[in-house]
Length: 224
Ligand code: ADE
Image (cartoon, rainbow, N blue to C red; front, side, top):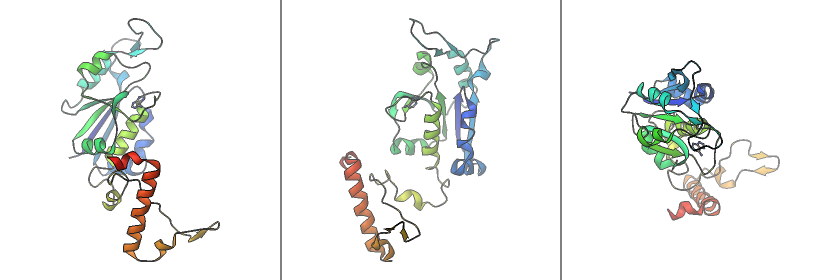
């Protein structure tokens, strides 16, 4: 069975390039990921295809109207969790990405303008997620990040299962530094231990580096 990701957006073209590169492209080709970008405007019924309107109570900006969003949601599998992307949501973490990757997929609603009518959030959405404490121009870039973070955790999406086991956040520490050839570049050499062939020493060195970087850059991870 494939993992269903349906994105409701006013800009379906936004997803064309990121979903058609590299691992996300391969996941779709191998039918593990079933992705669709659905244009909310296709669910309008007035002759101007109106998706937004002025806010009750006044103020700047426009608010996305509820009717086309609900019509679009109703066209989809009702069992998929419906997620709204917003800076007011719970923070996306590795743990949350893992949790989402174990389900059958999800629907993502991308907001624009000043936001969406609150009744959508109160009555038609199951969960709100933020990708960080900053404001984007819309939910689309956040949707791409969420899809990427979750898809790579779905079994068989990454070629080599090993590539998940040591990485940052699986272990609650940041990654160790990596080097490749040439052995000397512009006067900078590769740490001697990595050339030693001694796997125990290499593992010890990598662990030490992980802890050093984490302590310096993200001490909060070690306290968790
Ligand atoms: N939409 C606008 N800003 C966002 C953010 N930080 N996370 C998720 N969706 C958003």
